[in-house]
Length: 115
Length: 111
Image 1 (cartoon, rainbow over the protein chains, first blue to last red):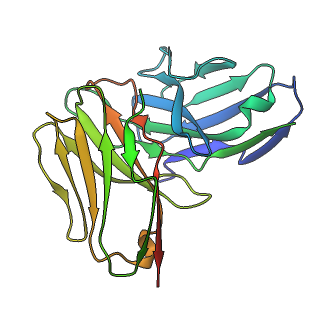
Image 2 (image 1 turned 45 degrees about the horizontal axis):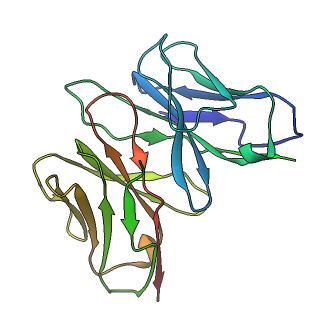
């Protein structure tokens, strides 16, 4: 049981380049999330998807786009990377709904540096 | 708005106790606690729901006061393995809009 799998683990981009961070979960969770973590800031929500086919903005969505490809996969795209997007990105998933009080399950993170 | 955690950092000797607090300005549905080791993903510790129920096991437990919108994490007789950064994450509704995390509390346990 792999849980939440993120790729790549590390990435270096030049300003203006684009890339997509991939995330997949095998726990049949309906909700998926992208967070970024910066020193001293904790984890901040970029986008989330409550179910297949729906996405919503979180606290810090500017400069990012997402796609909920199917129930398992939720990708994060940087169209034109900026140094301010240097961060560690975590994908997470959880089961949501009136019957559930479940925790977030995190992937291992992607360490992105934009030069 | 991010919940406020206190203290920001604490250094303890092995065997000492610690309390980490989490306070929100919004009404809360639940509070989650996670621990993160350097270079790793956050790991779930426990969830507390409305009702003030204290949860946890013997040495790590937590409480949730929904009226005060506060939660506290208690680490008793700390072990070296407890070192890391502790985050509280809060939910204001029971929906899917994710957790709002505090900035974290760095806990260092010395032998």
